[in-house]
Image 1 (tube, protein in one colour):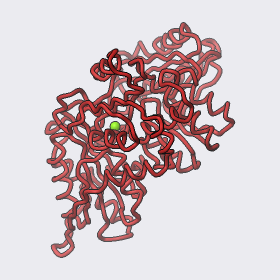
Image 2 (image 1 turned 45 degrees about the horizontal axis):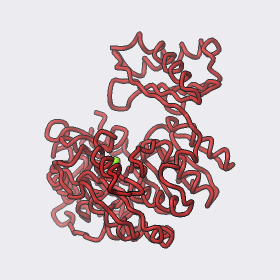
Image 3 (image 1 turned 90 degrees about the horizontal axis):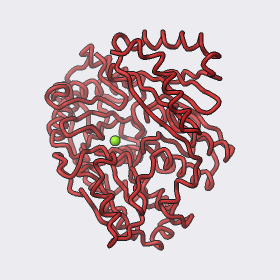
Image 4 (image 1 turned 120 degrees about the horizontal axis):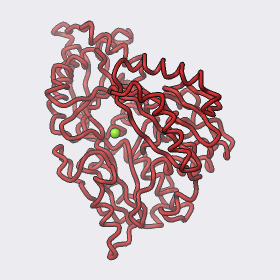
Length: 463
Ligand code: MG
């Protein structure tokens, strides 16, 4: 059984994701760490987001770990990047578990594994844990070798201190920004408003009570869920400089400008890229689905750019490999390696404030610092095996390459077709029977043209 999706194990609690799974996955992780042979009693850190099923799944995972002889450190309710930072700073820790379903709706939860250096588990290591899980190849320790559990309450504080230590605090404080934070009752409620206050910002904190029923809004920070934040900013009686919203586990951040307009995540990723590359030159990494803006800026700044399959795991791994100075995905996932190599919603927020402080621009001017592109996405539900369909589609497109005006085909993840005016990405989902089609171009009408090319090849396999 395939356990891991694009971002760990996810499912509806007590239907798709049970305490047995949590326990067995923890046992499998223990066996995986012990099989590596370094120690019989490795150390694992565990934490949760604010979901109400978090405690239940954590207790099961902790039992599985202790039974296997693991030394467990429970860091409580934390943003995912906070736990990752805790691990990064400690040599003696071998892995981490975050009980979180990130941006998924209330009824979901998930289990995400973190490597001993604080980065996300690699796909190969996930597969190795999954194989142990499926084969049931884990065993209980002898009574005298069962594990121990201790609690750590300083994880979030250490995380915030780490961020504050690497940014131009003075420049931000001098600006005395007025910000609205919307952490949507998620784990970021424990960190983002506090961090903003410490940077001398005047903060209106919305949805800042940690609450796993998510009464304020859905954990996914989509425009529809952020109407209140937008209304507060648009209110003529207020004069906020920026709105910042995070997803349920606070590894992603999205931004609203001082006029109450959403800043496109692709625009923000590229704008911060430009800002960072002005300070330090070095390679940058992103996924094949990221906007051309990211590529244009890397070219302008004359740095190397690397593309990976979709998913922050792959971006992070590549960044380690090439020594990147910046990276991320166009969904609000900014990765700044001077802090750590993972998506980090608080680090992103502070980088944006620092950028505003240093450049003197308003949030609404950020979009003017990067090239304009048009981008559209669609998805097609497929009947039949995705792999076979992708192969057939690939063969057909390769045959028609010249005829449809395609200049080049990349296969890093799915099929990326390059045209004179833009690109088209045809990519199978890792978790659902769908194929995603994304197109981007300088000219709006080209986007539609490319999408139609994609649909032309896929429609015959549509359900
Ligand atoms: Mg997340």
